[in-house]
Amino acid sequence: MTSKNYGKVAVLMGGPSAEREVSLKSGNAVLAALKRKGIDAHGFDADKSTLRLLEDGKFERVFIVLHGRWGEDGVIQGALEVLDIPYTGSGVLGSALGMDKLRSKYLWSAAGIPTPDYAVLDANSDFDKVAAKLGLPVFVKPVREGSSLGVSKARTVAELKAAWKSAAKYDDQVIAERFIDGAEITCGIIADQALPLIKIETDREFYDYEAKYLLDTTRYLCPCGLPADQERAIQALAQRAFAALGCGGWGRVDFMLDKGGRAWALEVNTVPGMTDHSLVPKAAQQAGIDFDELVLRILETADAER
Image (cartoon, rainbow, N blue to C red; front, side, top):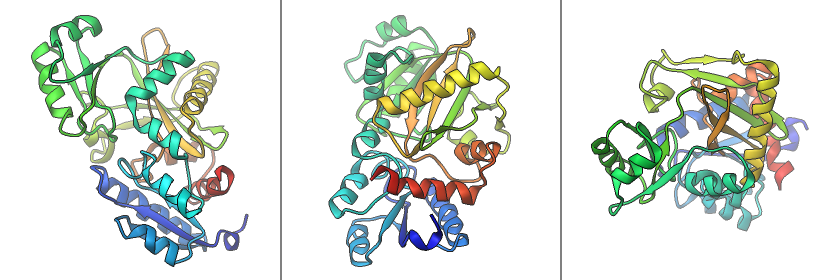
């Protein structure tokens, strides 16, 4: 497909979520790439007026680069379905499930996809029992948030309770998750292609917001250093995990690799970052796909999925 066939393209970024600043960086990088390819692309910092502007402007495709709420939870996807405008990435169902770590675990468990044990936390939780069930340390996470916002590692019962309070500032649903002591691995997906795996190494306690977006000391190993057959197995598992949630188009699946080499699915990102620190562009580059070509391939999912 040549650039003239794409028509008028809107790039949605920013929005009201806690990941707004990262989304603006990703969106501007995508917008610049589309313009370099000669595409009639226009950027929008998404707000309540955006849908009217898309309809009035007769946009033919939407490239969604909204991270977090609105962009990854099915909200904007449902609105664009009503307007009958093709958009990139997962549909309503896949977006909503991918954003929800708890319901992802329900489905993965039913599908036989390994995911760490967990417990739902609230004000009435018996934190001693949770610690006894999962062991310490544990990770505490908001159910519907990204970029490691609100995530803490708790080593004691007192820290577990404090971590729940911190996570609850981001979401009224919070989970504690069994700690998997091993390497963090991520797999990008474009259409039917699983990209080379990336192994993530950080000097911080875990791969948190600062390690993701602010520090230059985080190490991204691609090739990841795993044996080829193990890498292929994890790529296939990533595709299964992605499909089990009804996701499509493009995205990323994150895993922890335990000491025995078993991969445990943590979460799906249906609108991964597209900044200079982001993982999908790094993996695509290893596969011989430069940034501008990657952006075009993602844009093409607006046609393939709808």
